[in-house]
Every structure is written in C-alpha cells, then in structure tokens.
Length: 316
Image (spheres, helix red, strand yellow):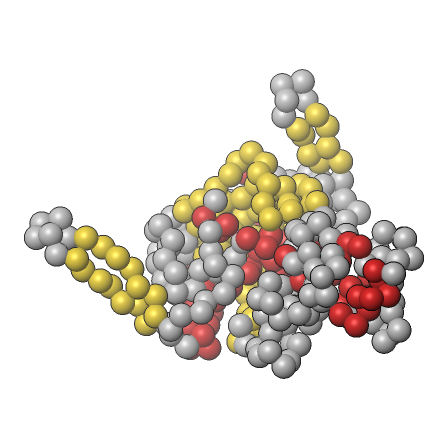
C-alpha cells in the first residue's frame, strides 16, 4: 500500500528525483523545490472545493441501510449542463459540511470528511494503533492509485498524516462472524470518505500516478483496531505522545522538551524502551507492580520512567 511508504518527517530543503536517459546515456536530474505549505494548502483547498461542487454521490442508497459497505459508494461528476444532483443523490459540497481544521507541520490545514456510517462498535482506534480495513484511493480526476477490497492491516503511524487524523473519528465494526471458507463477515462497520490536501498526504513526494502537491481522496471501511505498544515497554504507544499533538516528533533542541523524546536520544518515547535514558528499561520502572509505569509516580511528582533521577531507587 503506497500510503505506508511516506516519510513522517521532511528534513531536506530539496527533493531530488533520479531518471536515466536511455537514448544518450546521460544522467538527468529533476529538482523539485520544496514549496511553502500555506501556499500549497490554499491551492489544494481550491481544487477540493471545485471537486465537491461538481460531484455528487448516491445518498439515497444509504437511507435505511444499516450495514453499508465500501462498494455501495458511487461518486459521479455533473454532466455538461447539469447544475445539481439528480433525485436520491446529494452534491458532495452539501454532504460534507464545513471543512475540519487542524495544525500539522506548523501549518493550519483543512480537509473534508463524509461520514457515511459511524460504525456500531464500542471502540475507536487511537492515532498510533493498528487497524483492519479496506479502502480505495483516487485522484480528483477519478484515477484509482491504490485499493484493497479485502480487509488488510496497517499501522497508522506508518501512513500519511490524514489517516491518523481521520480514522480515529470512526468506530469499529459492531460484530463479525468467521465463515467456513476462512473469510470474515463484518457487520455495521465505520464507513467514510476523506478528501485530503497534499499537506496531509504526500506533499512534495510523488507516488506512482500521484504527482507532487496533489490532493487525494480515500474511501474506507473500518473493521477492527488493535492497540499498539511499539517498543514493548508496557505503555500503549498513543500515551507516549507527550505533547498531545497526535504525532510523534523530536524536540526542537537539546534543552527543550517540546516533542516526544524525553532523553533527547533521537528516538521518540514510543520507540524507545528506556524513555528517560537512565539505563533502566521503562517496563522495569513499575515498582508498584500494577503493570502500568504511567501510574508509578516518583518523588519529583512525575512517573519514574520519565525521571532519570529515579534510577537508584528503582534498582534498590
């Protein structure tokens, strides 16, 4: 799945794509300038707004449908001369409502979301969990760049930012049944469509038919979620988001803890088995024995696994 291949952090000023000219044997380089995120966001929203104003979906098929699926969604572009959706259909700009706002990469972003079914389960995934779902990703011209009809599993941390923002807003399936052929039938799943600007997708990184600075759309159907503990330290990964921004980031400098790396060793806590760098594994800094290091508060009023001064007392 291509959305699992994107980097979480862009740390270079330029992205350079390599191509070879087989005719003359020369090496050609295409240099892509890393553009201002605010500027690109405005362009992307213009494109998304135009798409929403010229496309409709089959809303009538979802009335009274308490178990809708990915394949039920049909999006159609207005034909020449048409100004509104036909009966039992709804224009997408009317269906999605106001854009959803958030801050990512120090940029004010907006995106659109169409919730077709919340999902009947009692839980929703966290931004760092594994999820089981099916999906279809396509460009604004309708070209499909990726899809999975049968359920697949992904770690939300490995996906583009938009997925970590959208998927946790839905519930998992109400129930499921294992069929005799080895497949599983899920009932009352979370179902929706996300309309993402490039800054919450691949931004300046081309992926197959997805060009740089290209807004994209995903239909998705959420089945199950599984809590992650990436470093097996006894603390669910989502709880190791120290600054609460729904991302795992490094500190801006060695003297400031404004990211998610307590000991400033270059590994965010969710991927660091010794969060405070005191030589004692986080999972062993649970002296009260309740299995949750976050509840073991030390003399300085913070959990011991985040306080290197607690090393000696833990070892004794």
